[in-house]
Structure formats: structure tokens, C-alpha cells
Amino acid sequence: MAKIFRYELKRMLLNKFFLCLLVVNGISAWFELSTQIVAGVAFTAPFSVWSFGAYLAGVMPMAIMTALFLLSIYYSRNERQVEALTLATPVDRAKYMLLRNMAVSLGFLVICIIAIAQCVVFYGVIFDFWRVGGFILPAMLTILPGFVLFMGLGRWAGGIRPWLLYVLIPVSLGLSLAGLPGVLDFFGGWYFNNYPLELPAYADGEPGFVYSAVFLVTRGAYLVVGGALWVISLRPARGAQ
Image (cartoon, rainbow, N blue to C red; front, side, top):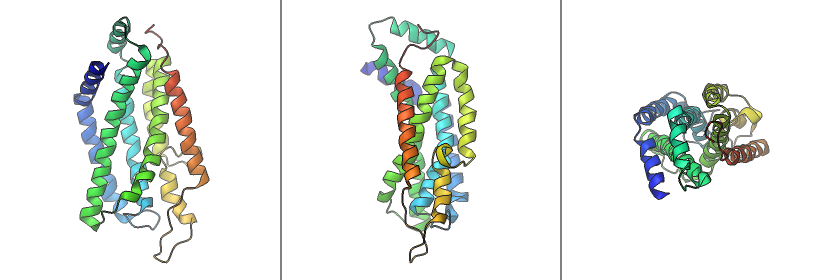
């Protein structure tokens, strides 16, 4: 299984398609920093937790779209034929599908690491701000729930009909960019950009960073729903049985 994982990982990360999307994500992230975050959000400093969260929420739609595109590779006709041949050998199907999921997840992780590194460098060079330890938990709450949800949806949709995955890509991107509140605030964009305006300001003129109950509940719901769909997707896909 280790050889299979190395093969899948190499095939994913060295794919020209992935490398091109990696560049596009990097450019998109830098544009977000230099045009939106440099002025801060909701009257907070550009290097506040609120602005950092808004930055990640802004780059996540493109990163998720990239991950869904990578996932779609596994649902092409040739890939399903290769999968059928592989599963005809003494390979545990659940482990095999898990390895493929891990390859896509690591590709997404690379995109996120680069985006966060860009932000850290931006804060350090422009504002001489390097104290980013307090950004770890907000980053996890922004990145992980949305990723698990959309990967679960992608695996589930692709397992029913491969073309549903291609429908999910623009739909997820559109809903994410729409800046909708509540349960449709998939990456926290509305929360980070608007919730500070409802909070009292401290002596420095900025509100302290807090997690609302709705924000935490929705993050947890995304993890549960996405994880459940991910597990369900481990069953044999139609056309691959």
C-alpha cells in the first residue's frame, strides 16, 4: 500500500494541471492580500485575527475548487477502468480509496501552506508583524470544516454520477463567493467580515476575537456531514463494480 500511496501522491503533485492551479492559487492569494486585506476588514488591523480569517475565507473557494478538480481526475473513464483492474487484485478497497483521498488532501494542504506562508511574509515585510501563533486555531476552523464538507460532497456526488462532481464545482464556488451568512457561510467569509461590527471595541479601537455559537456549531456540522459522506463514498462507485 505504501508504494501505491507514493505513486498516487507523485502522480497528483507532479501533475502539470495541479502545478498550473498551484500558481493560479498563489496569484489569487496575493491579490487578496494586496487589495482587500492590506486595509483590514471591519475596521480592524490588516494583521488582526479578523483580517487573517477573512483572508483565508477569501482564498478557500479557489483552493476547494482546485481540490475538486483533482478529485475529478479519479472519476474519468480511464481512471475508473484502472481502479477496476486494481481492485481485482488482493487490494483492500477501503484502504485504496483512503490513499487516493489522502493524495488529494495533501495537494490541498500544499495550497493552504503556501497561502498561509504568503500571508505571514506579507505581515512581516509590510507591517513587521510576526506574532502569528494566535492564528493557528482560526486557520483550522476556517480550512478543515469546509474542506471535509466539500470533499465528502465531491466523493458522494462522483460516486453517484461523475458529471455531478463537475456541477458541484461551480455551485460550491458561487455559494462561497456570495458571502452568505449562517449555514451557507462555508468558509467564514461573512463571519470574519461582518461579525466584528456587532462587537464592542476595546481601548485600541478594535473588538476582541471571539467565536460565536453559530459559527462553532456550523463548523462542527460541516465536519460531521462531510465525514459521513466521505465514509459513505467508500462503497463501490457505480460503473466500477
